[in-house]
Length: 307
Length: 307
Image 1 (tube, each protein chain N blue to C red):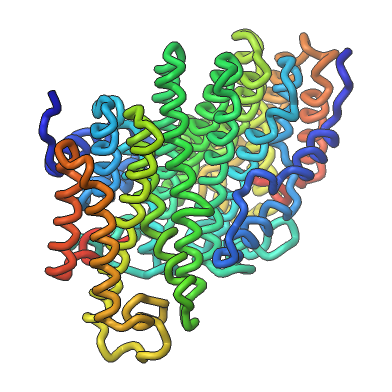
Image 2 (image 1 turned 180 degrees about the vertical axis):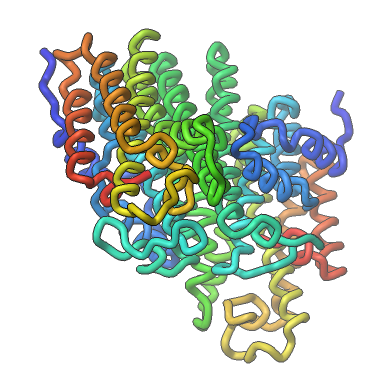
């Protein structure tokens, strides 16, 4: 019997275990621990780890055994926010209603907290693999999951999206560039989350492919909604033909607001279609779609969990 | 028959393959590739990857198959230098006679280049594991190697050393704090290099333990020599009783120059003693000791490959 699990179930599980896979810190590096802890405990919707756990569940896996990977992906997401907020990057002072990491701990500590979180993610997954030396099949699933996460976070994934985003500043953007940035910056790690969860749960090829496609559409939906929101907030600040918001390429300035809303509805529709066949066991994935629509309607995408 | 291999052999091999395990970069993130390439090609002694390959060799392994791990550890070392040089950290403009990454590419790109290198290290190792799914024994060696590297680079290793180093500024240091910083900041990744190489080569427990101990002593030798050098360069800049150089704790100001030299000779002597039984097959490890002594005598430790 499948137990019905909602978003809140996964979120609560992740938050209970979020510090479990950070190595015990020695007294001389207590500040490192404090700064990582500060950002990890600072709210957020835990979308990526929840996606990972739900994908594992849907694939018939044991969610408790997927926790190191779920937390690893949240460590990676959190490191990316800390580095993204730095003065030389987006220079944000506040995130989720609290001072950003570098405001609270200083720039040097914030950089190292990010580095520590990223490294801890892989340390956690590697350490977990050691447990499965006598179960070749379960071991392979873990290696595949970790590899997906490394790709999603890396130079053809999230980091590529970040650099393309920075580079695109003050340039008029092509549709290809915008798609590329959005896919890498946000969707790559969401795709990694569901694929990793699917592998951990032992999903077959078809389910892996469906979850991948779902993750990609959800990632695009997030980013388009974020762009729409920025446009509504910044109205008048960007010239209509430059294809930029805050001097970076964005959907609405390239396509117009109406067309952007249609695109948002399009990718949301894709996600619904993909998950429909699994409906009875995929409550979370339907809930996530509704949640994103709700956030977009209330204009709360960027404020809470951007990038 | 064992082929005699010198330092130069490993160094040349690493430099020939140093870009092989960086993911192919898409046009929109070309700057990311360029900035990573810039720092990876910018000289350096390649000590850590050479240690890894030599340890693999000494353990009877195939050096060519250890290359992803050797390059991974050089990616990690290189990322740590890029982040360490940033204005909010050590604020260095030059490294190895060339502008530092952030001077050449700007701070934002430098931070992302570091992030990209760190992630690529784990992506490279993870990808390599996929090849060995049908060879359980070789697969386990790879997981152990990758885990050692993650630990050496992480929150109980290199990143811990960095934060303790920063935190210790303007504090008078205890001997324990100095040992702790040195072990984590420099020795941890060297220990990881030789242990990873030993695992990859299929070393038994005794050889793994000996190489670990060798790596620790070599790491300490590096750091003590670096401190001695800084003291000689900064003479007069630090007060004798504060235990600091450039306002950070250091050996010579705590122990005096003579005692520091004795300590340097002590750890070098330990390394020699540990590697002696393997002498006929461990030419590299003897050569490395002699090289460090030479660098220390010529005052070239910090200038070239610090931290």
